[in-house]
Image 1 (cartoon, rainbow, N blue to C red):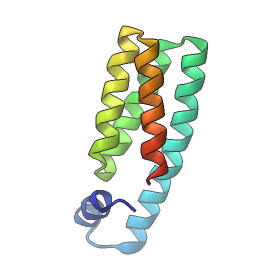
Image 2 (cartoon, rainbow, N blue to C red):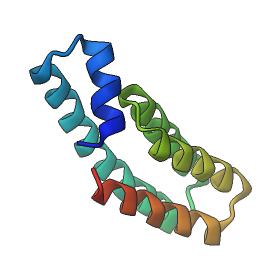
Image 3 (cartoon, helix red, strand yellow):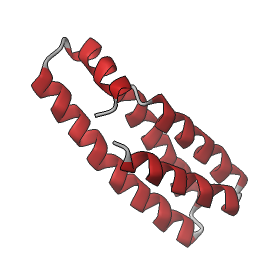
Image 4 (tube, rainbow, N blue to C red):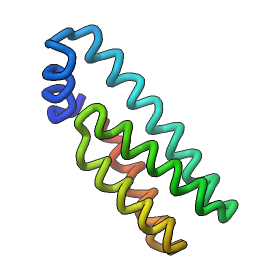
Length: 102
């Protein structure tokens, strides 16, 4: 578990180790699903869907204190709104790399 997330979740959940682990496990699972959805949206040229997926990643990341992932998701939202395929591809790859560190 990333230190930033552990610290944040401990503050939010009152050092309840079981709850912290459960919330973090759900977060890790959801990130993987959302990255797959982002790839599918990009392949389909579904820019609005991609924006919504990135918005969800941002919210989920902030909910566990993962600012780095949230910042990348914000950048992905912006790139999706501009329909910048190259930037979107890079940011999805960045999200995947960050997810591998979870």
